[in-house]
Image (cartoon, rainbow, N blue to C red; front, top):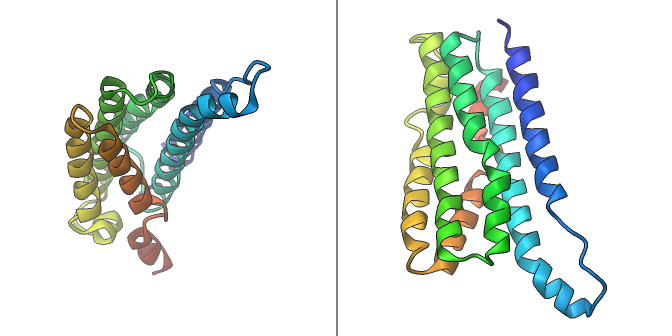
Length: 192
């Protein structure tokens, strides 16, 4: 199978997830504008953070697949594994916003991204394994310290959600900022 179908399917799923999230943004009922904005702040912030995360996964997934020579069954299943965890983002985003960043939804939000990060690493390893010793992706990611650091930070943030929610949310923002720019290691290999 060519990687074009895999890319198109993944692009479609991520586009649907973003659409589902934006449909959760409800217009406030007529009332005091300042009260409406105060009520919408957690909803908008959780949407913005999740939109950024989905964008990060989409751009880095796109870059990673550029280095894939072929698609195997293992790569297809690893990709579905990643998409499964990403498909939970609209639910956790809505729950986080509705509960105004309570500890439990904050922790579950982080767990979803922890497992998505792990699934992304599994997909990366499947692509590397399919390419063999001369894998361009292996050359690009090296020891993948950024990926490992992200998983560690998610773990800390999930635990901290039960102790200090603002610090937990700050860690989620920090991880997003780390990945906001597409992986330059891959771009360097793509340029040759």
